[in-house]
Image 1 (cartoon, rainbow, N blue to C red):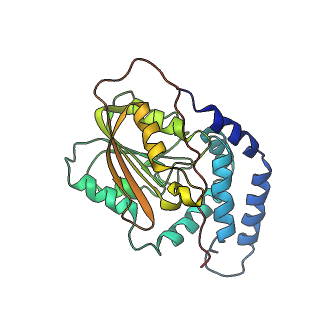
Image 2: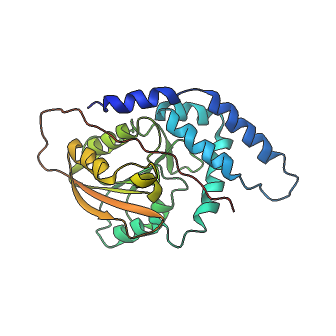
Length: 256
């Protein structure tokens, strides 16, 4: 399935490799700290990291951070510090959701980070991300995982819809999910706030449904993130239609 043409035109302006130089500059600044403790990445570094990841494809990001995984590690250190200030973490809600269901459900965690999900449930969890610092994490382009078709019961995207081809990640989730399998998405709320330049959550949900899912839950009750649940339809439409995917803007991290 093809992404919407309007989205392609918008993205074409943001594929300059210059952002890599900005990231390297911020990395060097953070690494010059004389403190004995690991330096905390600046919010400007986190902002630029998100902007960079949204300006390249998953394949390009995999190649770039595979060559320099320390930059990816720095991002996750800053990310964890930011998350420590949230009153509730979306991954914990997903963990609770899974614990309320059969441990026999097979899970694919797209953009797993430190693989907290896999370490917290009894289910078999395939953990994917751009860089692997853990034997249980598979480093890959999330649009092309090693999973077989219709092989998992639950696909999870917890704050991980990044890259110009994020829709390809969702297409991959659709491929690996069994019929009636669950797609669970948690994303920063500002990315889905049309009033501040974010995507329209209804248009995003429509695009996911056009991919072959049915919407089961839209939860906007948390002030930090939204939760979207979908189920893969038993019967798929044989006619391929062009899907209009809304653009997802970068997260903006608060200075602390």
